[in-house]
Amino acid sequence: MKLIRSKGVGIYFVTQSPADIPDPVLAQLSNRIQHALRAYTPAEQKAVKTAAESFRPNPSFDTSTVISTLGVGQALVSTLDGEGIPQMVEQTAIILPQSKMAPAAPENIQQAMADDGMSKYDQTVEKDSAYELLQAKQDETQAEAQLSAEREAFEKEKAEYAAAKEKESEAQAKAAEKAQKKAEKAAAEEAKRAERRRAKIESQVISTASQLIKRGILNTLKKHFM
Image (cartoon, rainbow, N blue to C red; front, side, top):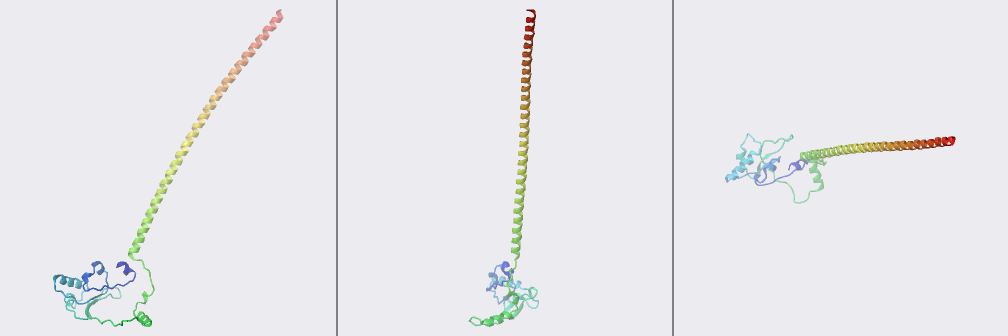
């Protein structure tokens, strides 16, 4: 009922007793035409009282009393004024419908539409109801929450990736440092081995040279004295 009314659609509820209409729906009705209600049982008297209290009171008569004494063609009527405010209930006579059991002529339809004062409804206007606005707001809130969660997950993943890259860089730096130290150690050991080989060669050269000199001197002395 609330959603339909927000779209400018009118609905008529016709029943012998207002108690047939659920209270949430009855509360949405604007114009009321109430014919006579007879009260012969306590339940019917309660229904009459309830129906009378649903009208805006008129100080000129008691609604509960009049609603039970209405005659044929009489009714209690309450409608909305130009500002949408319910008017006081009035006792009035109802004119019987004037119609014929046949389709109306097109010119009669156009004339009736021109005279009904409802021309502003000839153009369709799709208005959003409060329900639709709240639903859109809820969808927007859910979308923002989802976007925030995705952004948070992205930032978390980004931080984890940066931490992993930093850890990898540190590991690579340590590996490079370790490799450098290993290379330096190997170079130092190779230098020591080269130094030992050089010293050994020098020692061998000196020893050989000494033997040659000794031999030369001995040969020279031997020739001189012989």
